[in-house]
Image (cartoon, rainbow, N blue to C red):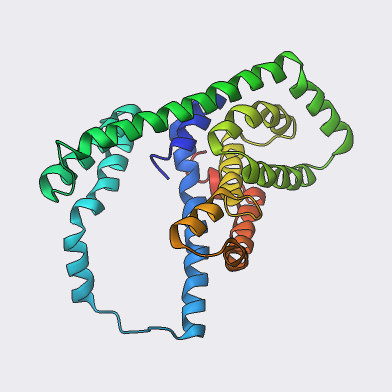
Length: 273
């Protein structure tokens, strides 16, 4: 969903139009959300925990309290799709909006102490990302100089004839990549390898991008080394083994959604082509 940085980096690096990628991701993204929401509703009804009648007045009150936060996605998405702002400008507007709301509306952020601390944290984060991207880009250039993409394409075409089998193998590969690498490094290292293969099998570039991004997100939930599993265990103080067991239903549901996205390309291309 906009303004997801992974989508932007994928579009820039693979030279796929960003607008088409964001449009192509709307239906698959809503599908994955709907699948998880449906599981949550079903599980809640079976468990019968804390069920209570929906109160429209409470919902309206909660929305009034969160009005500034609810407006943020509308500002970003509206600016991008209306043509008023580019992606870079929309990112700057997002930062400015959050800064004004936190400092002058909610007053949760101090100009004297909070802002300098955030600036240091942001610089550290960006510096770390740039180091990762620099190493990944160097490794990618090494693979290209060694003609690894061409050799990989030749091997795949000699062993896999069916497009459907290729897509299944691609899903498995990307799932493993998502467990082992962050999305930024994976884009720089893996995309040059899989893009020629997908083109040889007639996979639409936008469809390939959504398959790639959906699989990488799923990889963050895949045991034993999915990044989000470690973050959840640390943040909520739950043993990692318990997180592994709890995530299995969601993992299966989302994997089913990824297969639907993979084998039903119209879900991605309906708003694009």
